[in-house]
Image 1 (tube, rainbow, N blue to C red):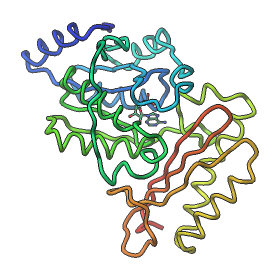
Image 2: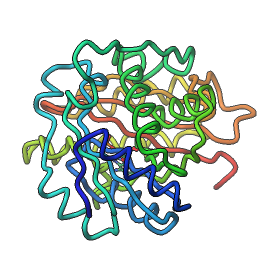
Image 3: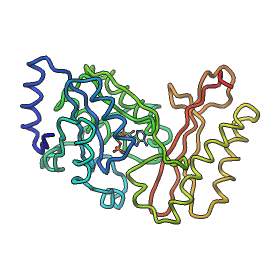
Amino acid sequence: MEVIKQVHTIRERVQALRCSGKTIGLVPTMGALHQGHLQLLKASAAENDVTVCSVFVNPTQFNNPDDYELYPRTLDQDIALLETVGCDMLFAPGAEEVYPRQHTLLQFSFGALEAVMEGAHRPGHFNGVATIVSKLFHLVQPHRAYFGQKDLQQVAIVRQLVHSLSFDVQLVCFPTVREEDGLAMSSRNTRLSAAQRQVAPQLYMALKKAEAQLRQNPVPTIKAGVAAYLGQVDGVELEYFEIVDPATLQPVAGLDGMQEVALCLAAVVGPVRLIDNLLVNLNGH
Ligand code: AMP
């Protein structure tokens, strides 16, 4: 696997690949790779001639300086893992390579899509996401790009970005990979103490409880139930819990006429802010 740190090198490689008719799969990540990332990389390796993984802790999408500083960075370990899943190129640029001095941060607007949940609670977050994803799509020119449902709103924003800017890339989305106790895998989980790691699966438990009550109770009751449930868990502070239409991400007032809903939450556990979601098919049992 080739490790590339410079913009001009990735451009050269991609140009040569495109000229020889190879298909390119891109898996954008912030590193500290785990099984959630590896699932995307394996899928890309199976479906494309060449797989590129990007590892870049993107400063423009962090609204909290501590979160950026303390985000886990484990490049040597990432390289070893990438070698096991058939990744052909790692693009791991430094911040100054991606954002040269005196660059201008363009402003995106995603309207209602970003007025809720992560967009509402993390000002500027999706502007940073749209910026880095646009840059990566220009630099790597992938035929397919792989994302996780764990970041449900991100997938919706990137889908809108691709549509609005006519990127010629197919988006592929994979389900959330979980630890055995249900905790959604996340690079930030490594920052939890043993005690915090023990309570963190309660986020998934809360989602499962809400799912079980979905057909029996009105939306406000379910929302209050989740807040009460997590309110009793020491060391967990719920930021939001929403029941939304997965297509628009807008909160629903009731379930009448809905085929599917997404249950989404964010909570702070110790030093870390975690998100999770469940997609629920209402036509199922
Ligand atoms: P990140 O490195 O956290 O920015 O994630 C890079 C990509 O991996 C994003 O598309 C995430 O949605 C996806 N991802 C992260 N964690 C998981 C997980 N537990 N299951 C599935 N996909 C994930």
